[in-house]
Length: 552
Image (tube, rainbow, N blue to C red; front, side, top):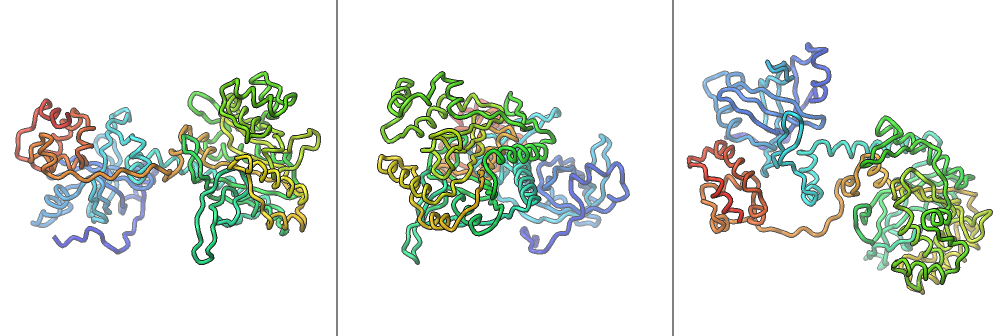
């Protein structure tokens, strides 16, 4: 027909759906000549006139099409053929017209001209909303939503709010850090030695250098090098990679912010953390409080402070301070915990806390003063032998931040690395490696420093009321997708589908026999009626009992 379905030229818009909805009633004269672009999300065709719903990045608005306005001459092809027969839900168009209010009181755009900007080849899932706003036949399968986030964002626009809030968390933190003169930096993702945390790394190989490399598990050691170099405060929002399990709170690739400030300690860092998270909560939700399921969390400081050994004693009755490694291991086994001889006393204490205590820490709480064995980069506690000056911030049973008074004694740091190597020899595959260059940097002198890492993904989960990390990642890692061959006509026929109804099923996005067998026959039956009319299928509708035989 001579219509380019994927035009190259710019399409200039002068308004958005949200702008019209918000401001039209108060200033109608400014909306007499509007140009807007977006995706078609629904049609109601009534002969020579039609209504459609358009969605842009800000929301939805109704469009009104009138045949004689679009086709003032004798040729009515643009309306009768292009609009009514060739446009589909999911197509992206640009329209020019004026805003008005319908007899039912709905703000709409009277379209004088339209232009196809992109022809969609795959049908979108049809999500129906009733008069009360309740969703029916929604695109809700998590497997599909996470794999096809682009579809999820189109048909479930409320999902966008999660990621808008996620961005707001980051910008609020960045503004707080920048206002105090701390510098945002970037450090290497590919590293010759993995360090800065207890975790298994991903390994790769650099061909030109013939060198094995690791994807970083933390940004800590490089950021501390910058403190040695003379910066008083540095921070980095960065991706970290840990070759470990996946569950509702763990993804192998995740985002943190790490901050290091010279001449501070972990007590100062607790106060700073309270301040920044209070500001973040207000920026995201307008209040320091956030609902997570049935629990109301409050990010207003000050937060409770509880040492890890006191927390264990409070929730289990076990006084780990009075027990040696063997006695603690025996108690773990008595509880049925999976422990082994490679775990030192510190690791066992950490396991007990994770298994028996952390689920009970609901409101923001600093768990302080951890065992030295579990904190090889942290200064020894100034008052408690065997402990270090460290805190983890727990909220709703999950750790969202980890902070230290940083160890800056190069001699002791070397001894700590050597202790880690001994743990590795005992079978601890999360123990740290010796990093000679980092030790060399400390030998030049690092001022007293406090550092913190905050998990952006978990913080976003808490502030957006999401219990799964996949909900707050645009593209979470998934198991490899099983490739399904699109069904051929003979496959449908073998499943009892008459050939005349195959195009309708394909238009309804039932493209494999697996999808057909998993579909609801009542939904297929109901949708067939509309598709029969749209495709002008001149065949009597099949009965519901007939449709049920297709999916059996």
